[in-house]
Length: 424
Image 1: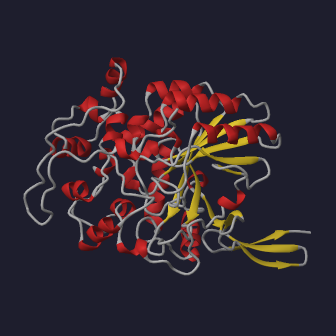
Image 2: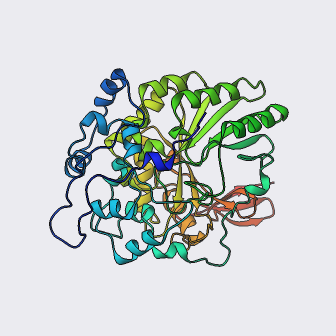
Image 3: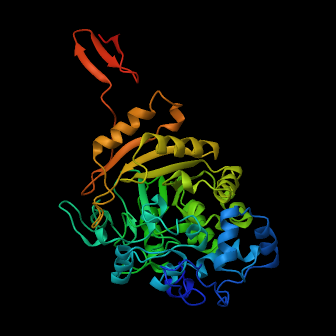
């Protein structure tokens, strides 16, 4: 039983030849559609046709995939089949800078280029500095290793009693179900294992991880991640949920995913009906920038929320992308409108080649200070550093404790005013 799509089969070359990036004429549109890898049922097609499409998505589809109907575009399997994975495909839809072109051509090994057509429609064709474009198209900085960086900065491999399972905290485990993502973020903490490389994922591996969880009764919480578990076929994913929920001491499941953001069409009615059967179930979604808050994403999060799944967001703080109070406030407010509770703001992990993404820790504290008190507390995430070497998540706050004296402390509020509080 395969548990992940094969990158070789889900990302065939884009249709048609790549256009020259320096011309004023638009790229030549695709001329053929490869055969479907996962045929959808008629009912699935009918439901998919009602999935919303923004005007930007429609314009992109008509320009670069003119033979794809709205129903095809809304089929998550079609989106996976047509992921943009090669330099020629990328150059067809984006005018690459010399640095981007060189970085894409140079790449080998894990963390390949992989972008769904839907998410590609959100990228700027002409501006290399656009935030979403910077997070998904390689640049030459990826190939520079700075002091303190490593392939496994969080020491996950050290805390893996069996392959694909990380047991760091006493009562919970991280279950890495797949190494496949529909879209690859260039700052990925698990760049060593996603999209290829020496790590493999299989049903036999799942069984070993399940056996470990069954044998350790202190485990009450299982977080499914990867790769992205929502790229796994629904029937196989349900098999895994059912096996885990059958373990009496497992109280609830969590899923970490970016699929509702980069492949919102995957959140089908069939998927949400299946997920409802395994409550209590929580979901952590990975958002980066307000540009991701599209009508399609509003639909995917609404379907999950309507299925009774509490949604939280995890955002990585990235230099020049979301490292300002106005951008972060807009993102957090937008998430609340989508019924997604801002949960974590992560300091970017020191993964190899990530220096061009990382801000100072002071920048993160500045953003939290700019949110706390200036907007609702629901919109203020926890700012955390996942400590290198396996220390776990450590929360950081601006210094609101101004002084301590006999019988009292002095507190500083969000406006900078001081207040004395009795503390015997």
